[in-house]
Image: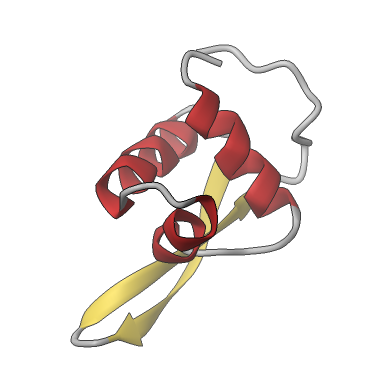
Length: 77
């Protein structure tokens, strides 16, 4: 895991599906940083997009941890 924020994101997603906005509010991190790292995790097959919902004229993306992964598993970057 190249960045500690990615592990924090996976721990949040391990508790249930969430959006980058919800994660950023929970962790007190900027939305842009959280969104970036969620996309990196998605490309690395660590999380997955499970749906979208309308939110203030945009689409909010909802992610969850991939079923084969838990927050305690070692990750590669």
